[in-house]
Length: 115
Image (cartoon, rainbow, N blue to C red; front, side):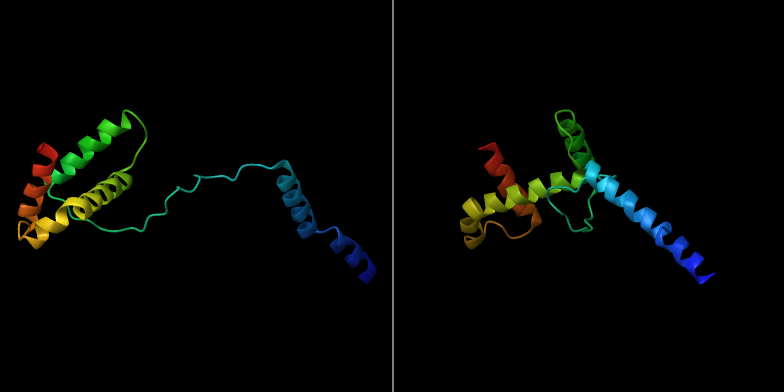
């Protein structure tokens, strides 16, 4: 009787599952699900005023008409752009006291955009 049990287990369920997995690997099947993004993002909470939320939604709709983009990517582009702008033109303004709070920062940025 023990010999019969050994015979049954040699070609058991796990061996069959392994064979199926090996066959799938040989076929080079694509993995299921969404492919990973090029840039891995860390979840962060931001608090937007209603006007800022509306502007973000309008910008997303405008850009989605040309290519797919999500709000996280838009916020990332905005942060990178502001950082580059401040590194090139903002250091002097901060040193001179032109930028004292969020409103003066906004005015400074709009001044650069409109010039």
